[in-house]
Image 1 (cartoon, rainbow, N blue to C red):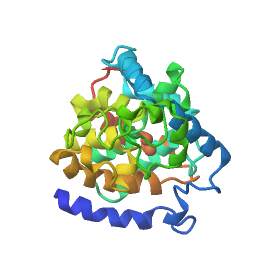
Image 2: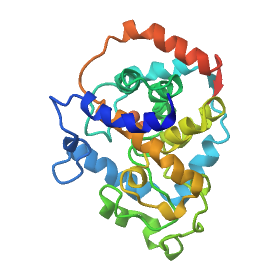
Image 3: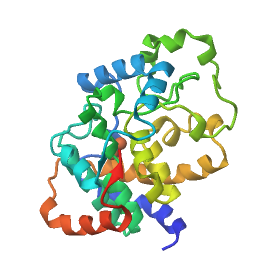
Length: 278
Ligand SMILES: [Fe+2]
Ligand SMILES: [Fe+2]
């Protein structure tokens, strides 16, 4: 199936996702009705993700040197991990991996994209290294330049020390127009970490999905386009497509994971070696 057809077919997923239970508008609601723990999450995340913090975490984790292990070892910690930034899912993250991948599979997407859905959040393994959730999950945003009001709860940036640094508060900040997202320091979290782990094994579209799927201000609202180069702009369509599966497949339905395992064991083995650097 050609890529254009995939891009069009994302419309069908809108009907896949529990339409009888929850409408699209009921996902990602960030206002005074948002659960207090999610609001508290973003208050801390926006205050603490500074340029200095991000550079420190990049130095700590990149290049990868924590351990060598397989994809299934990483999935092991997802039995108990719950994402505190997520207002739409309270099941352990293991279910989210299967729900996302199964929604892609039902719509006939290629194996690399189903695999991308299956592994896209494995960077949340950072919590196992002791990172607090505010340094792992939630939407991401560029640091070192002005904050877009398309970020959720943008007023919480007032508490970030970088908001007082004039160098960081022009539209471009420390970057140049069209410099490309690869040259932009994003708030530290699971996207960048997993991208570094898997980039050598997946097509460029999958790399983008993994690296920027939490960059909602850009792929949902079109913010920060002045930092993108031509390749980034082309890849936004894949982020939009993926978003529909990542978001609207979330439900409290518990899939029969044991029955699904053989398919996913084959899929992981098709793309990844037994051990990877993390
Ligand atoms: Fe994610
Ligand atoms: Fe996700």
